Image (cartoon, rainbow, N blue to C red; front, side, top):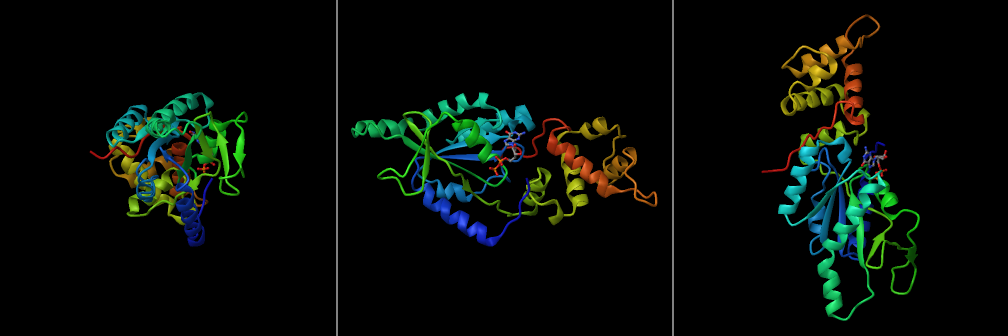
Amino acid sequence: MQYQWYPGHMTKAKRQMQEDIKLVDLVIELVDARIPLSSHNPDIDVLGQNKSRLVLLNKADLADEAKNEAWCEYYKKQGIYAVRLDARNRAGMKQVQDVIQEACKEKLEKNRRRGILNRPVRAMVAGIPNVGKSTFINSFAGKACAKTGNKPGVTKGKQWIRLNKNVELLDTPGILWPKFEDQRIGLHLAYIGSIKDELLDRDEVAVSLIGELTQTYPGLLAKRYNLTEEAEPVKVLEKLAESRGCLKKGGELDCGKAAVLLSDDFRSGKLGRITIELPPV
Ligand code: GDP
């Protein structure tokens, strides 16, 4: 799925999120495990102050397993709970349940000390578009979970999904918008298909992706596409067009076509499990 940004949507989504976050104890943020930095909006660090935090490194099935591990360690050091996940797969949900309980332990304990025994902790899911928020809510909540809402004391219209006697989840996710603080963020979002392809020069995106892949996964492209090792990314794209027979009508090389081929292969995992961004050191 691809999307475009409209200022009206952004303002409305942010306002909604500011309201919703007041209602919860725990914020579950989804990021794309291939680009955890670019798919994170730093606004959530401010909005989520004083809340427990859980980061789900989603689409971990498409990311490099060793790097998933490194990211989990990184979050742990920041005092943020983290779980790597394939949101389409219900098998991973048990672990998420356990970590939610762990993340909310203090809150539950505090309630207990105050004699509040029947109040579940409340959580919300947040993240930029396309990271898998809806997929996660569906897999996590499943059909068996009762929806609650419109009961006294609950803001009218809010739907809460009761996960167990201790935890409720807001059924609508908070939408954050990517922050384009530098051009790299835009490029990285383009690699994973989170920016309308028409908005950027696909050749440029492909050349940039080739540059990063050659640095972090040397030899990968040469092996996958049977190319001779080539240092210059533009040349790699040309070689790819050549070897795949991407030609324009006049017989001239069609690098645009090769760019589409490369990005499709990257997005679908055909290039292997790849993580573009490493945790800051
Ligand atoms: P949302 O905009 O954040 O709600 O994202 P969606 O839930 O609509 O998911 C966007 C796309 O990513 C869909 O095509 C999902 O099937 C896919 N998707 C979601 N989670 C995963 C995952 O963990 N792994 C993979 N490979 N695809 C996923």
